[in-house]
Amino acid sequence: AQSVTQLGSHVSVSEGALVLLRCNYSSSVPPYLFWYVQYPNQGLQLLLKYTSAATLVKGINGFEAEFKKSETSFHLTKPSAHMSDAAEYFCAVSVGNTDKLIFGTGTRLQVFP
Amino acid sequence: DAGITQSPRHKVTETGTPVTLRCHQTENHRYMYWYRQDPGHGLRLIHYSYGVKDTDKGEVSDGYSVSRSKTEDFLLTLESATSSQTSVYFCASRDRVEAFFGQGTRLTVV
Image (cartoon, rainbow over all chains, first blue to last red; front, side):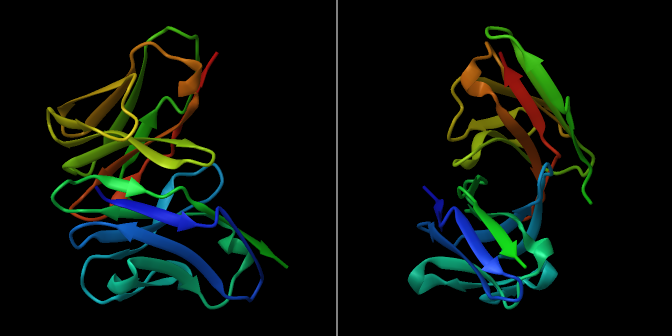
């Protein structure tokens, strides 16, 4: 069965610093992978998605992620953090033949001035 | 933005009572999902649907049932609410790839 593991439930960075949020997946077949963001008291919004095209995926708000099959990873990065990036981030995996969409436990990003 | 609405947005109910949460989508998406969100657990899949009258269990389905009689509506029922079901519930609908989420329902079981 597919699953995702997010390493680090909390990440803190200074404004302007690199953001790196880690996600590793488990899937026996090529997966679809997603990063979603959740701001306080809101639903989830898609940041970016991998669907077996380019391995480096660019998303909204300057975020990007790289699919690395050899490492079963899909880490989220942003070169320079902004205060408005403070939110909770979720990695998710889907395998086409099951239609399930499975989420990780989330990483809360704090950005300090 | 996809039109996903959840109702009610907030509900307080007593232990042992049945509760139904509604999810309505206007995008004609085939797939719909119910999740619960709890601190430290992220989003856990309760049930999902891959078409009208076609549903399947997720990771935490005990104590919950679902129904989908129309493409646009996906109902989640807590058959006999317990305090452990106090949570924030999210519905999502999905086209072939991307899922779109509702704003959530905060349910408190007292």
